[in-house]
Every structure is written in C-alpha cells, then in structure tokens.
Image (tube, rainbow, N blue to C red):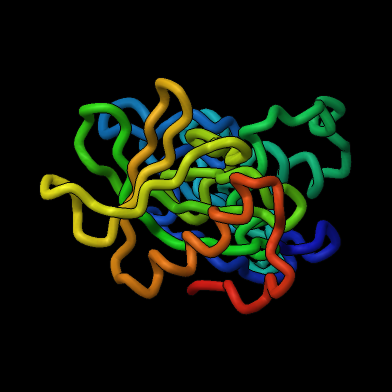
Length: 211
C-alpha cells in the first residue's frame, strides 16, 4: 500500500474491478444497479460512489482535482479520521493482508448444504493457523465467513455428485464441502487441515504457499 506521505505524489496501482466484490472502504457489496465501482485516484482502491464522493488536488496529475476516497481525502488535506481506528470485527481482516502472510491460500470451490458450488478465495493465516477464512475475491477487505477448524472431521473421498478433487469438513450438523482445481492442490490443503483439526500448526509453513 502507498505510504501516506506518498499519497497523491505518484500514480497508484489500480486494483482491478474483478479483484473485489465489495467497496474497499465501507464493505458494502457491489451490485449492478446501485453500487457502481469507482477508483480512488490516490490509492487505487475500488470504492462505491458514496465513498468516492471527495476531491483532492493530486501532485502526480499536475495538482488537478481528482476523485478520491474518504480516507485519502483526509490524509491529503491533513486531518485524521478519528473513527478510522475503530476495532475491527473478526471478519474484517483484509484478504491481501492475510494472504501475504498465510500458511496456505488459493481459490477453492465451496459448497454449503444444497447451495450451488461457488468459487471462494480461501486463506489460513499464519497468526491464526487454525482458522480458515473465505473471501469472495483476493483483494476483498472483509471475509464472507470463517471456519474454526479445531474439532472438525475431514472426509476426503468425493461422492459421485461432487467435483473430482473435493473434500468435506464436518462437525455435528455443519458440513462444508471444498474442491480444488487439482489433486496436488487438494493434498496441500489437506496437509494443513489435518493438522489444524487436531489443534496443530505446520512446521514447514513456507512450503505451502500456493499462488
């Protein structure tokens, strides 16, 4: 992320529209009608119209007025937003933050009860190696769900109706089904999950980075 001192001094890396499913500031989901995606010209984040309704003079663009998000606006005009440091809820760990420091992360297909399979960006963070975080996309700033893995039973034999490289996590009535794109990726996940359900973390964490 751009350091505050650099904001507006050089063009940011733009987060692509398809890398997020929600506003990176207020976390409201985007939908086709009411929430169009806008880019903050200072930090490059994808935000909704409400969060992009600010303008600031940006040095890299010849000090012209540009659309910026609320946070950058406050930094650039020099006042801090006091509520910025509010305590984050458990789901409000940014995906990019945990993916960069994870035991394992990759896309997996996910199915809950009888809903259709959906693609999710799954992460087991190093600082919480017993919890599986699920995001809609790799740059989302809030998780869709978390699964504390301790005590789950792992079933890695797919039924005929399942996707080929699938496995299930079950605990009393809750069943979570996952499927990887390859057998190799499935085994990497299972290696970590088999430890996590017993309350253990992998020794050789670095071997499990999956791009």
